[in-house]
Image 1 (spheres, helix red, strand yellow):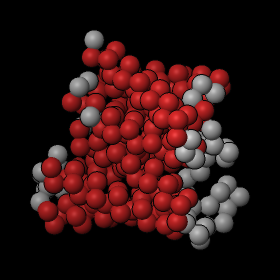
Image 2 (cartoon, rainbow, N blue to C red):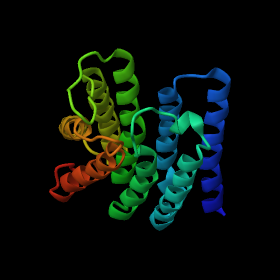
Image 3 (spheres, rainbow, N blue to C red):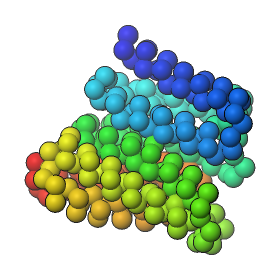
Image 4 (tube, rainbow, N blue to C red):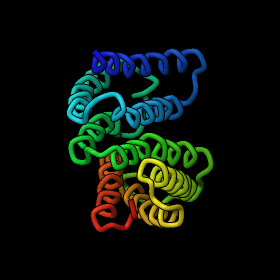
Length: 218
C-alpha cells in the first residue's frame, strides 16, 4: 500500500507542476527544475518509507513512464526544453541504481539530494547569472552554475554527515568540501542530461569509499 501511495504522490507532483506552469507560464527550465527539486527531496525521504528493493522497483517503473511522457509530450512544462537531453530518463534510473548500489540511508540521501537540489541550482543560477561558458560542441557549463553546484553540494554533504552520518563537525566539513569539488568536476563534464546519472552514483560511491576507509569517523 505504501508503495502505491508513493508512486501516486510522484505522479501528483508532476501534475501540480504542470498546472502551476500552465497558470504562471515560467520559463520551461524553471518548471523542469522545480519538478527535479521536488522529486529529489521526495526521493531522499524514501528510505524512511520503503525498503531499498522497493525503491529500486519504483525507480525502474518510472523509467518507461517518463519515456512515454516524453514521447507523448504529456508534461510540456517538464519536457519542453530546446536542447537535446535525456535527463528525465536518467533521473528515475539514477534513483534505482543508487538504491541498488548503496542500500544505506546516508549514501542514498546524499546522492539523490545532490541530484535533485544541487544540479537544479546549477542549471537555474547558471542560466540566470552565468556569462562565461566553457566552450564545447556538446554545450557549455557556466562558472556561476558550477559555483552554485559546489556550494550546495558541500552544504548538503556536511549537513548529512553531521546528522545522518554522525560525523564530527570538522571532518564532516572537510570531506564534504573535497567530495563537492570532485562532483563539480564531474558535473561540468557531463552533457545531454548524463549528470543526472553520473552525479548521484559518484556521490554515493565517494561517501561509501570514505566510510570504508574509516575517514568519516562514525
